Image (cartoon, rainbow, N blue to C red; front, side):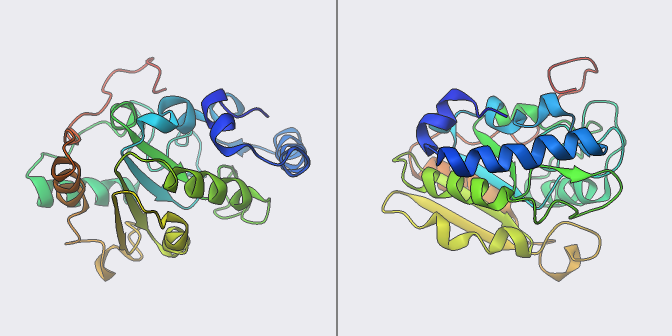
Amino acid sequence: MELPAAWAALLRPDPAAFAALSARVEAAYAAETVYPPRAQLFAALEATPPRAVRCVILGQDPYHEPGQAHGLSFSVPPGAALPRSLRNIYRELSDDLSIPAPASGCLLPWARQGVLLLNSVLTVRAGQAASHERLGWQWLTDGLIAALAGLEQPIAFVLWGAWARSKAPLTASPHPRLVLQSAHPSPLSARRGFFGSRPFSAVNRFLTQQGGQPIDWAAVEESEGTACG
């Protein structure tokens, strides 16, 4: 297991702790069906280098059904059916910015614009949500969030659900920050504060106030067989 170089340079993880996490992760891939596929484990970090990050959308753990998880939180490859959480995200996007709900669930174009689509836990056993909660990923992802907080560029943190909201203290920074917290877009909780939260317009308002460009939230990857898949 190897972090993308730019993220490794920013985080500078403890070698012994990283080696221990790597051993547990590799053992899981060897022993059971794990999502996302091994080659896409760090897809979110590869798509959005640290200095490009303008927004972080933090989820819980990957989708646990076949053909869904591909390393970007809440995203699925082109052609995959939209999970219910993503359908709710698109519903809020439409309500917030009057953007028609896309047919594709591949959010790689968001990542290429500086939206880090990160999960708190980066792997999951097939068919079992939260099954890798105790594998040790939080040590790494907490470090990534804290390291981002130290960068000077404006960053919006979008924290959906209890797992993500627990990371709010890690975002503290002397630099321009926006921290948005709400319920998770899951059908079990979306009506308890996710719907009506209008995160997309809030992020764009923050970025433009800081002199940056807004995110084109309407952009998704429509074609199968692209880097998104």
